[in-house]
Amino acid sequence: MSRHFVSIEGLSKVYPSKEQDLVVFEGANIGIDKGEFVCIIGHSGCGKSTILNVMAGLETPTTGTMIMDNKEASGPSLDRGVVFQNYSLLPWLTALQNVSFGVRARWPKWNKAKVDAHSSHFLEMVGLSGALHRKPSELSGGMCQRVSIARAFATSPKLLLLDEPFGALDALTRGVIQDELLKIWSETQQTVFMITHDVDEAILLADRVLLMTNGPHARVAESVRINIPRPRNRANIIEDPAYYKIRNYLVNFLVKRSGQLSGSAGQVGGATQEVDPSVEINPKNEQSAALKAAI
Amino acid sequence: MASLNMKATLLSLLLLLVGLGIWEAMNQVPAASTGLSEYERMMGGADQEARVPPPSQVFSHAWDELSDPFYDAGPNDKGIGIQLAYSLYRVLTGYLAAALIAIPLGFVIGMSPLMHKALNPFIQVLRPISPLAWMPLALFIIRDSEGSAIFVIFICSIWPMLINTAFGVANVRTDWIKVARTHELSPLKTAFLVILPAAAPTILTGMRISIGIAWLVIVAAEMLVGGTGIGYYVWNEWNNLDLNSVIFSILMIGIVGMLLDMTLAAVTKLVQYED
Image (tube, rainbow over all chains, first blue to last red; front, side, top):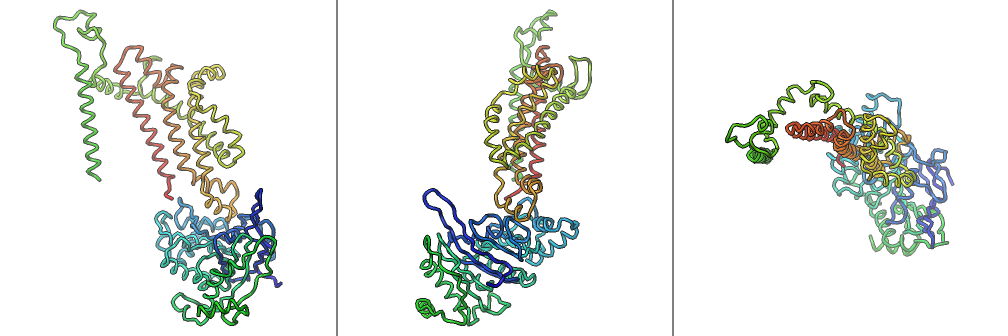
């Protein structure tokens, strides 16, 4: 196994209970290269959020470790920035103060002018230069999430964790912020790990999409390479010949195979398979049939 | 909406005038039909019955008092300003001492479920005790009436601040705590940068309740310990049968209480945030 920038080995989370322990997920092995954008998709209850919280250091796994940049990562750290679904801005601070809250935590020795300049630069990158001094209650949901993204990028973490950042936004706003996220990501060359429920979002943003089977006993079944050249944008990505192949593959997994593959106690199902739907037709009959039906 | 305020102001003035008018009309000294003896004049005219002084008398008395609020003509005759200043001094001393203990302790109780469970029985038993019930014990231990009055204020204002601080701190949104954790803030920084501002409105509400209670209690406490202060003043004027002064000081107690509350309300506004 080649050494990745971030590698998660044998991760599992079990909630003990009197009758039968609840195994949320087990045997999760995830590798992320530097600068890679990885999305993870799965049904509710498969433990995606738990994986992310473990990576953020907010929860402890039952087994397994996470190694980042050749060091074991445990406990929360500024090296791993998090964007939460509900923005988690501090409502008594303005947009600028929320971002500089993170910047000041990261570089305590910077003076105020430097902190402010750095923070406003990142708010400008997400198109909020006009709202620096407004409080979250005076911003729309989309703007709040932009502030939250700016806060995370501004601290330049080694790994950025996004927990369904667009889940609470309407489709139009979501599209605009996806573009902004792509822009800021390509400028900063961040390594990103993101949870999403949205297949199109995953294809637009990710280099690879991890697919999880249903919980309990969920596992990371497949790693799907999104072989669509960058820069991508929402308008013309659908014209790429690989787009629908990938999309159908992902939808098919979520609708059918995530349930079929879902494990039961004692049956840990093998390693994560690497898949590239754009070049190969998977040998499994059932899959290719589904693909043909979809095309 | 300006018209609503206008209407409300007009209605308030109207109610005030009607109330004062009724009060004035019901308490007129009847005109003497015959010449009065000296005794009758001393006793308030031809009427044998004592009367509440009408507002006109109270206001003219208030005018006299307020035009020289800080005179000092001996232990039993001090201006209203001096008396209020004594009361305010006791209230603020006891109150600030209570805040210095209640807010840090409330933080500890709010942040630690262990401390909450361990201290809660004491709080529940001590809180319902009427503050004046502490007075004899305070007098015995402190051996000073001034100190005892301050202690009574301290003990009555500590509970709302303590309970509100603990509640506010315990209910800080976990998201914000997560933000602090992912930014590697030390516990002390988390307390000051995240928990304190998040809980500040709740803490301030407790402080506002406390100052109200302290101002209620100081009057009764000063009636007991005597010497100086607005509570003592009310009781002393009652003993002097000077109802003008009694009514005047009641009004002053109300006005000062309102000012204290308005001050805390203004501070609360400063730390309020919209979620």
